Length: 133
Image (spheres, rainbow, N blue to C red):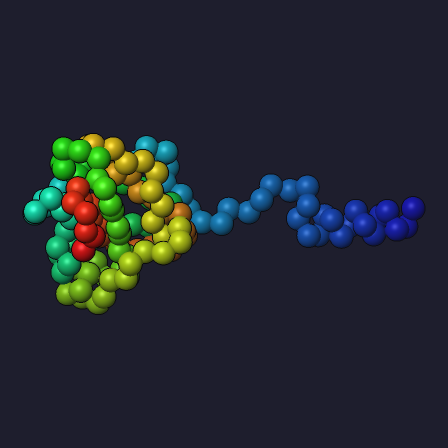
């Protein structure tokens, strides 16, 4: 009997039987944030210039990027930064792992999500040609 009580106390102390902790704050809605800006040049869409104003990208946030390419992109890539103006105020690095998760891609939109708890600034591009930048 004493062993059972000790085991129950240990399970209670380690959190078993209780709801899991919240790891990081997530957006209040499951709807992606629409983004209808950016530029297209030579079949390549970019959300901003390399040293332009990047998109705020807190943990769990996701965007529905309206790329305007008229067809489903053949390729896409995203970069993240800790600085709001990319190269002009710091640096950008190509996203890795779940920093930018692709949720959907079609002839009108590219939907990406920050699958981490880290706050970033975001720059994405997509294109219909054969070569990525």
